[in-house]
Length: 69
Image (cartoon, rainbow, N blue to C red; front, top):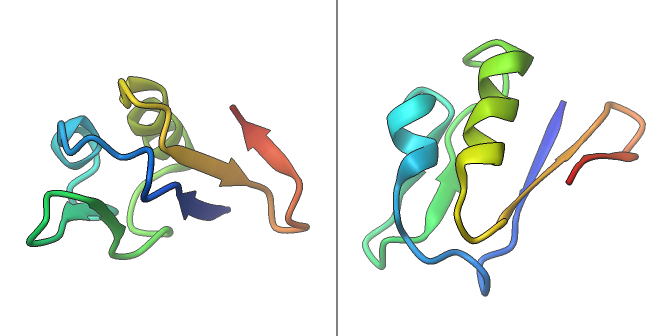
């Protein structure tokens, strides 16, 4: 799974980090950053993406096709 962050959309709520802290963190500007996309299950990563109130997390399969949103 590949993860793309829409940094201009990220509002820094940190829900992703609360749900999957080994995958996501917040930088010094409170913007989402990916630490390791493989550090948790795909289900947990998707849960974190779905919890983002700004819809700033895009998930793609290994072929680069969008699978969320």
